[in-house]
Length: 476
Image (tube, rainbow, N blue to C red; front, side, top):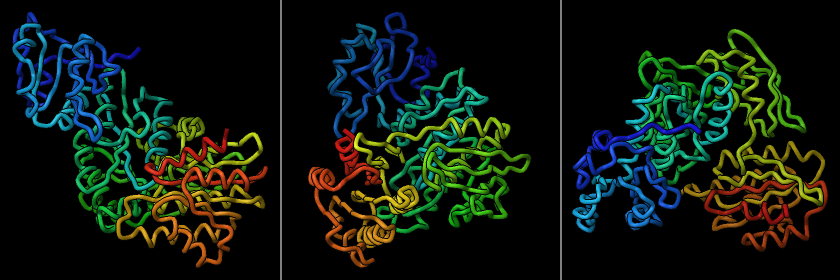
């Protein structure tokens, strides 16, 4: 078992800038702690507990529980300090560090740990594909390096620190994912992880409802490039004009950029040629400056090629051979809810892409359905795309139009914006009798009567729509 780096109270104070309320006497206060935890349910007695204030739970409510588990070091917020029995804790040798904001302090601890580790960091962001690219990149780097990767989509101000706090002297590289909802968030996460390599997969309209324009999204994603450490590399998608704009800015500052492309852009050093969609996935030739190698991805969707090129670019920058990159990419398996292909007992093919949705990923998924279904019937089950603001109506109508134009037999729609999707599909000529609007349970009943063997069904929607319930019910 790989152990986390230990912590002393002095290191915690240095990292957070906090104030020690109890545990002054080192003979009573345990001198070292084995790790940092925010989970009162699974905390070890020699961990430090950080009391995070979340949207649902407040970690301060569980301080008593963790002390009963034997925990002897706490980090709490200043506005809760008056309610703490510090004299009692002092007598028992329980250390309590008080800070202004425990969520920020979690990031401060992670940044401290990142700096004291020997590992380097690859940070990946983008409107689409960042989770898949992160997993592919970790698989590639693991061919040569001891590599730490984010668990699931640990890509925010809590998830990223929890990943970096796992760094120790064993790891040589960490591959992390940076998500955002507003401008400034990528910059904050970049300050925590201090990347040696920064990857932007693409720049699309995800979260446009909050940021207001594609230019604002571009600038927000570009915050990552400003945080790349001296001598590091930016890896960018040459097929995305906004990513190219960021790259030109980066090169103008004398910073190193590497571009990749599946559209044979001359600026790209890493290319995909001879792309072929197959029943078992997708194949192409990976063309690099020094050598070329065939790649077969066991996952559908032509957009997967761009994700693979980003991962291959990281491997190339770090000096991996074409064969090592090939092995890493071909060992990749899709993340649950990300273009997983399932087959039910009655022979229905499900494309489970329920993890999340935005206009670009929805379009790519519909195109994948059209390619995979061939001459069989296709069904799109669509949930709302969230955080689109004033663009929600037009973008949901566009998805309806795309679905209707992809030769599908039925369109099932759930959510607040379902009627806009239906309107877009009707405008494209789809028969109203082939469109069904309802909640998840109603859609499941409709599909139960409609589906037959060899059908292909795409199920997709934003995370908050819970579309995985439809996958589970149909697949049982």
